[in-house]
Each structure stands twice: as structure tokens, then as C-alpha cells.
Image 1 (tube, rainbow, N blue to C red):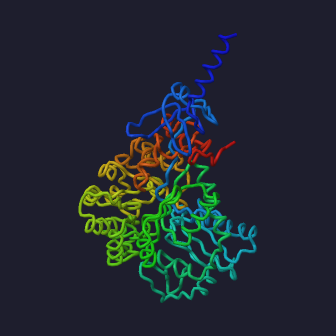
Image 2 (cartoon, rainbow, N blue to C red; image 1 turned 90 degrees about the horizontal axis):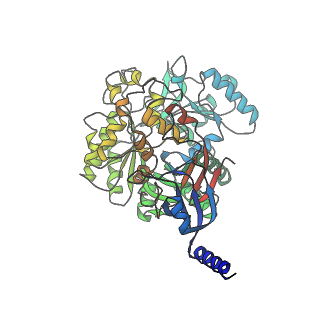
Image 3 (cartoon, rainbow, N blue to C red; image 1 turned 180 degrees about the vertical axis):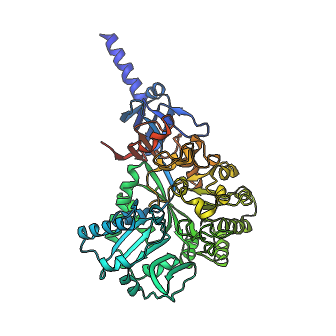
Length: 543
């Protein structure tokens, strides 16, 4: 009897000596994405942080968990980052008519009629996602058919890249646009003296100023819809490229209330008022919101021929694109922001825009530094300018899916020689030893595995082309994973708190149904997320 009591006492004592934690995950394939790219099979979480990562047998002796999770050899990764997205824009798009993938303008008209029938009480008919490059006739559409079908309803259809739109005559009348309308950094398309309804880049602002304002209730619904879509694909941190003070404050309010779980690295839309307000207020940092950067637009998009090129477009010899923000304006903003602790993140697509901004950055950064100023997209970069990323410690923030979306027509825009300097991801990575890879959603699909696949395989959803597109600039698979985890965290000044599964970091992680590091490349885009955790809390599950 004494022997039994002694055993029980010893067992209870051993149990009591175990450290209490909230969660133990075990029998897993844990890709830590630490400095050694090491793997483990278990980790423990307490108060939203990783307490220890290692071998299950060892951790099980040290810890007692309120909740245990046997993953039965499923893979676990750090929570995925999207270092360049449009989070609120995704929420807005989810409430609009979806035009993505339409193979003709006729199909777009059919989708619009069906959407209008299902939503007859909406004041405006709004859609997004058309791309004339997907059509047999690869030219911009015009408003004539819209005018016939919707003569009394304002119709606004944004191109997939967000840099051009088609509107009908009702909108043109409301916005008081005429063939003589001119706007810096934009284009109002006129053919044979008549408006076509096409507005490019800054010209879109003529319409946006007459659109009805969305109230807080609608915006909340859009934000929650964007969150649901993001969590479904394993995103735990998004980087919101170009948001207003009001939107930042609303999202912070929702985070404080507990309804908005996802973490957001907010890039403030550059402008005199915003720069004055935020540089005086200083960096705003909470567990879920990080406001320490400004988003600047240098040029437009390649698909709508608004990207600024050093030489004219190969398929439009009279056009070299245009700046959305003048050189003097950018210089003034960069000077003001440099004096603060804020980061500058500038949208540059064309080789001329990249050269201009790199040289302006160099004026202030001068040499190696830790300001982490970024260039967003850097799609076409002249070889002479690539070393400037390293010289000035500029972070390339790319979207690998842009390469695999544009590769069908990029040569037509750029010509066979210049296209070789497009999407040079590996060359850019070499400059500072890292690169951030996002999606630019809703321009591209939300799923970060699409960008992961495009980064190393350089193929589309149908695994085309065989052998990949310009493979000399493909990332390795390991670096493709780093680019959407720890390197993106670094680009956001968050590498010490997130981006890898390591002791002391926030317990953001994702469980996948299959191992994207081991399976065939052709299967990666179909891999599902089984569950998403933020701060140790399950925020999404397939079950």
C-alpha cells in the first residue's frame, strides 16, 4: 500500500512540476523558417506566444497543456504574410460584380445583367476584374453597350489592376467629364472626338468624387468579409497598401472590440494632410496594427500602359506611360518622411519609374541603412539600376503572380529584349539577401500559395509554360517560403515578433493538408488550409 501511495505522490509531484501552457501542438512537421530553416515536430504556446519549439518527447516531459493538438504528421508553417495587398479593396470587391476571368466583353455584360437582377436596389452598378488581354480582341472596351442596357443606372467597371475603369454615359454626365477634360497623371480616352468611357489612373478620381460614400456599417461588413477570405488561405498578417486615416481608425476600433483578428501593416495613402498628421503623431504600434509607412504611386500599370518606360511601348510607339505623382512632389514627400521614423513604399512598375525612385531614394538614404524603404512591384528594372537596391538597402516588394499573369502579353508590351529585364526576382533578392512576396489582392487571388508557386516554378495555374517563364529569375523553394514569412516580416519591421516559429514570437501559424515543400509543384495551388491561428487562437478551420 505504501508503495502505491509513493508512486502516486511521485506522479503528482512530477505533474505539478510541469510548466502550465495553453496549447501543445505535436506529431507535426513544423517548418520553423528560423535562420537555419530547421524543422521540429512539436511546440507549446502560452499567452499567445511560442514558449518552446522542439521534440515532442522532450516537450511533453516539461509542459502540461490545457489544449493539445495531434496533427498526425500534417505540416505547420509560420502564419503567412501578404506584404502588399488591398485589404479593404478586397472587401469592397466581394460586394461587387465579379468580372475576373471573363473571356469577352459580351460575357461581362451577361454578368452585369445577372448581378443587377440579384441586386436591383443598389444605386450604382459596380464591378471589378475585367482584363482586355484575356479577350480575342485585346483592346479597351467602350461604353456603347453599357448605355443601351443601363441607360439610367450609373455603371463603373474597374480593370483587374485597379489602374483603369470603364463607365457609362450616366456616370460621365454625373462627373461632368468632357472630351476636353485633362488631368495630370491620367488619361480620359477620346476616339474620333468622342468619349469611350475609359479612364486611366488619376482620371478615375473624376468618378470617385461623385460616388456615394459608404457608411461605417457597410465598411465593417466589407472588412469582415475580407478577413474571412484572408484567414481561409492562411494569412495572419496583411499589409494594406494605401489606406486613409478613417479606415485605419475603424480597423483599430474593430481590433479592440475583438471582431477583427487579422494583423495589419497599414501603409498610409500619401498626401499633404496624411503626411502632416501621421509624421507628427508618430508610429502607431499595437499587437494587431502597425502604422509606420506611406504608400506613394510613381506610375500606373503595364496592362493599361500607364507604367512609365525608358522607351515607348513596343505595341504603342507614341506612349511611354506617365507619372501619377510628379518628381518634385515625390521628392518633397520623401524629404518630409525621411525626417520622421516612417518608411516609404513606392509603387513602381516601369523601368523609368524604378530608376527615378531609386535615385530619389539614394538622395536621402545615401548608402547602407536600416530605414527599409521599399519599392512595390519593381516589375521592369533596367540592369543598370538593379544594384541600387543593394547600394541603398531598398527592399524589393514583389508579387510573383504578376509575372505569371502578365507573361502571355508582356513581350508584346515590352519587346523581346526588354522583357528579359521584367520580373527579375532572383536578381533583386541577391542585392540585400531577401525579397518580400505578396499578391496585390484583389488584383491577384488572395491565396498566398499561388504566389509561392509562381515564385519558384514561374508557372500559371495550369502549370504553363513547361519549364517555367524566365527561370533564371526564379526563387528557390526555401526562399519562396521565406519571402512570404520571415522576409515579409522584416520588410514590415516585425521580424523580431513574427514571421517564424521560434521561442518568444507571436504564435501565428497555419496547418496545411499537404506539405508544400515536398509535393510536386503542380499540386501546390490546390493545397487547402486546415486551420489558421493568430496569437495561439484558432481563427479559421475547415471543420
